Amino acid sequence: MEQTFIMIKPDGVQRGLVGDLISRFEKRGFFLKGLKLITVERSFAEKHYEDLSAKPFFAGLVEYIISGPVVAMVWEGKNIVATGRKMIGATNPSNAEPGTIRADFAIEVGRNVIHGSDAVESARKEIALWFPEGLSNWRSNLHSWIY
Ligand code: RTP
Image 1 (cartoon, rainbow, N blue to C red):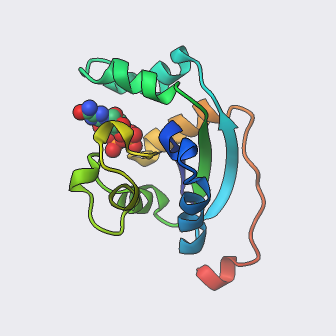
Image 2 (cartoon, rainbow, N blue to C red):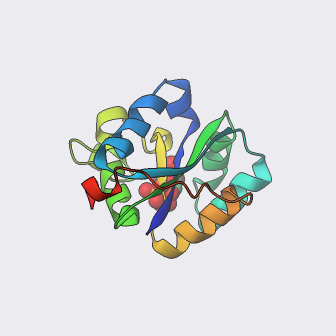
């Protein structure tokens, strides 16, 4: 089953949105496979966002991500990478569709609350980076009620 990496960014943690955001993924029917509260080093944030290192906003983005704890998660389910991105909404909350996380909880592109992997391959890389210890292999009893 497909997996994705989801991170609640420091603003989401500081604003007390963790429960609401986890709830959205749970209620949709996705299964939580990894979860931790972690404050990352600058070099780790730079590695996570290495594809964006040439962007003018890179330095500010790294400062933002290391400014406080984040909630790192792995979620699993059918088409979770693309569906997770849809649930999160457009990068700039001003362009996010109503009902998406960024439309419901954010205003600024630089404080957009949550990250989700943009492709199956980047999900695989991000999960390996953030969860080198591996993931839980529990299987929910609800599986047959969702699939
Ligand atoms: P993410 O990786 O956080 O899920 O976001 P994304 O795919 O929707 O957007 P991406 O282009 O990968 O940008 C990563 C994060 O950089 C910040 N950003 N700031 N100031 C700006 O113009 C700007 N553009 C992007 C956002 O926090 C964005 O989520």
